[in-house]
Image (tube, rainbow, N blue to C red):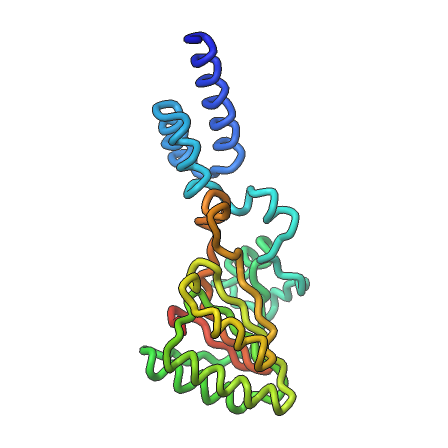
Amino acid sequence: MTLFVLLTYLLIVAISIIRILRQVRNPSKTLIWIGVVITIPVIGLIMFYLIGKNPNKDNFFQISRPFSNYQKKDLNSDLIPSSKLRLAQLLQHNESAALSFNNKIRILRNGEETFQFIFESLRNAEHTIHMDFYILESENMLEECLEICSEKIAEGVKVRLIYDGFGTYELKKSIRNKFKEIGIDSREFFPFHLFSIFKFINYRNHRKIVIVDNKIAFTGGMNI
C-alpha cells in the first residue's frame, strides 16, 4: 500500500511538472509552481488548473484562436514613426490587434461622461452596434441601453452583444430573455457552472468595448 501511494505521488508530481513546463513561460513562476506541486501535489495541481495555466498554451485556445486578428496585413513602415515601429511589429506578430491610421482619441474620465457619449453614439447608429462587457446588472443603465437597442433594431440596425458568464452570473433570467425578445444577437462567454470552475475560472472576458458602425469605439473600465 505504501509503495502504491508513493508511486501515485511520483506520477502526479511528474504529470504536474510536465504541464507546468509546457504552459508557464516565466522561469520564476515555473520554479514556484514546481515547488508547489512537489510540496502539495494534489492540491498544487488543482491550484495550477484553477489559476496557473497560460491560455496561449491551452489546446482550446490554440485550436479556436478566439483572440486572433484575422485581418492581418503587411505593415507599411513608412507610415509608422520609428519610435513606434517595434510596438507595431509586436502587435502584428502576436496577431492580437490590427494597426489602423488617421484615428482621433478622446479620454473620458468618469462613468457619467462615458455613458453619455456611449448612449449618444448608440442613438446615432445607422448600421451596426457591437458590445462586449464583463458585468451586466439589472439596473437603470442596462434598461436604458436595451431601450435604445430596441429602437435601433426596429430601424434595421444590427446589434450584437457578448457578456462574460461569470461577471453576469447574477443577471436575471428575464433580462437575458429580453436580449432575444428585442432582437439582440447575444452570446455568453464561457457560461459559468460547477464544472467550468476547474477549467475556465481564470479565462474570463474582462473587456469593456462598444463599437458603433465600425467607426466609433469605446474601451476602458466601465461595465453596465
